[in-house]
Figure (cartoon, rainbow, N blue to C red):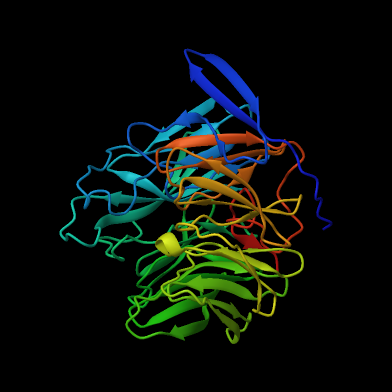
Amino acid sequence: MKRRKTLITGTVIAIMAGAGIIAAMACLLDFNDNKIIDHFYKAPGDQMFYISSPAIDGDGNIYIGTSHKGRWEIEGNTWSEHYYMLSFNPDLSPRWSFQTNNSELIKGGPAIHPSGLIIFVVESNGPSSSQSIPNATYNKVYALNMDGTLNWSSAHLNEDVFDSAWGSSPLHPAIDDNGNIHVQGQHVISCFHSNGTLYWENRTSILNYAGSPTVHGNTVYFPSGDTNNGYIYAFHLNGTFKWRFTAHEPACNNRFNMISIDGDGRLIAGMDNETVHAINSNGTLNWTFTIPTSNAKVRQNVAIDDTGTIYLGTKNDQHSEFYALHANGSLKWKYSNPLRDVYSSPTLTTDGSIWFGTEDMAIYRLDMETGDLLDTFQVERDITWCSPAFTASGTLLAGDMGGYLYAIDFQGIGLATGFAWPCLGFNFQRTRYVSG
């Protein structure tokens, strides 16, 4: 894919809905300055867009879910009784809201099923029995119709989840070419038919840390880990075991996080121990890149362009960084300025830009070739797991931990769909599926 280098003026769009009246305001931005942008939506109460990222269907409708962070109750706050899966029209006006019960926050998704379902994973939270580790009561799966009504929900995937001091990573679902839905919780991996019936399930104590599966062709991959090892498990789509990859690191509370697939079918995944691995499709190691900064963690879906270049950020408090690696695992460039906690998965666009959020209350835009800073946009609160999306008309969408949703119009910019893995979940339907 040829990358355009045109610099496109951005427009902030603020939409406020009340009593059926939509008011819109727009202001032109100067690319040479740090921009403070307004929001178009505020989540109920103190709820956040902490884990969920915008998903966009074929008609341009937008979906995103609310939550709180894992240590919310431990830090003296109260879980909400209800959390929400929200939908917005292409003009950003509210479309519908689906309410969960029993403090079921949106822990993964949404993903848009080809049959017209909105799939997401929830996590119910109650009082913690520990002052250091959150206690989730259970995980389960929801499937909504496109009008926001319930189609089906699963039984509890698990009970009494103790994952880590910050809770589990996002539990995004993956949807394979047959329409089957793959999900993961602590000590369990499950696959559902699109009508909600269970196809297969594997319960094992080895899958200690939970994450987000990825499907490549006829194989589904599950990331996990424990005190001494990071694991990736490969299963055939019918649930039979294929192989396990192990990365050993003693006493490190290790885990693989999200898995991306490059153009050669290799798995590219980061860990919590300063490393990024490329793993061949047969489960053997291809290469390992060690991040030179101590305590760096890679918790996102790394992005991969059409040359095989890999783009990733690190979670390392005020010492967080952003890197580009060549396809062979060698360093291409490192962004020159310090960042704060880059959980947000990079989004690659047709103009040759990289977009991601950070916990220094900003959305960054870098040049893919050089790593040079092109733009920053200041938001109200930190951006954690939420990753940018672009509508068909070129509007950037993102949410933050204050529960604010933002929209910035970049006419002519879109997802680089010809790239190997251009964004969280591979596409803006967030299906986490790549054909073999």
